[in-house]
Length: 264
Image 1 (cartoon, rainbow, N blue to C red):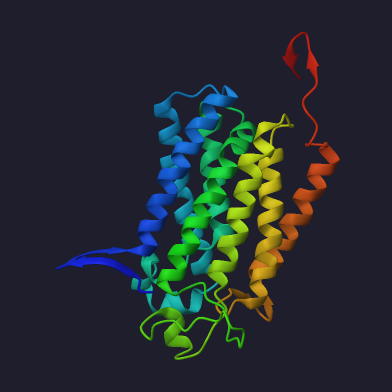
Image 2 (cartoon, rainbow, N blue to C red):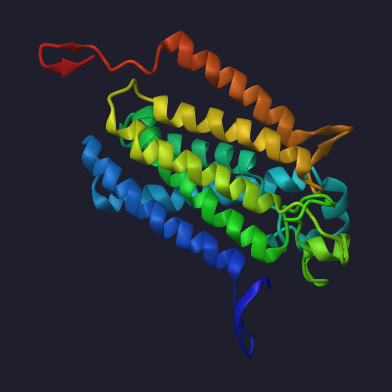
């Protein structure tokens, strides 16, 4: 594998960026489809503006989160802060940044945040699936050394290959890719076709992704650390528990009550 798909003179197309573009395109299609199906009062232009602003908020949040937990390095190398193609987008920061921007955008247009969150949840996890393939080709978000037969030796000039030259590593990007795609199939093919309380599909996405990420982190070699602890595991466990409690306390799996022909 190689991070660059195509290069002509100063122009180069990297798998890392390409996968994010493809992910955004697929996600946009799914979101527009769900907004229409769920009868959310947004025009197609509103939806596209929502997607653009949310993506921007997500990328900025993901990068800032990563930089904060590697502050010493980036203070010494400030020119690397915008270099996202070198790796370093933390999904928890992306979810936080994207959610804040989405909340502000939807509030201004009087659209229910949790209803829209259910519409975008399958698209988010599908986008993450494409993103992990980009990580694989880029050689970042890599695992630690392994003797397992599926261990992968990354190119010497990749991030993983530089840290572990000529050493088979856990392909943690592919582990998470498989988990993410399985979650997408559950949300898109099954859960969205049933009536639930607003926020249920998004909550299920958060819990399942957090559980999967918690497991994958055991095999990662480039985890963000807080002292001796892995930040992603602490955050994932905390979020999974909090959202799980919310699901059961609000009984979100139940269809909204219907009264006088209207959902309550």
